[in-house]
Length: 103
Image (cartoon, rainbow, N blue to C red):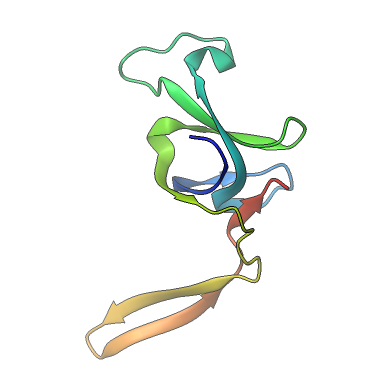
């Protein structure tokens, strides 16, 4: 897995800026479990994805990756939409950006 990807995580994570994000975008490098200095067992993640550059990156446990979409072009940072279904129809709301950009 080489190149730029939009990685969606199963749970929110806190980035260095203190905000919560649900995805990260940037160059991806797959790492084994030696990156944290602890050997994991079969009940833990045994691989990680480093998203970003040497100086600015986030390391995501493989078990937390929900989707990986190859995207050389930087996604929009203007936010997006979310929706909920109700008995009377669908409600669509605007949401703020939840992508952590590493570049």
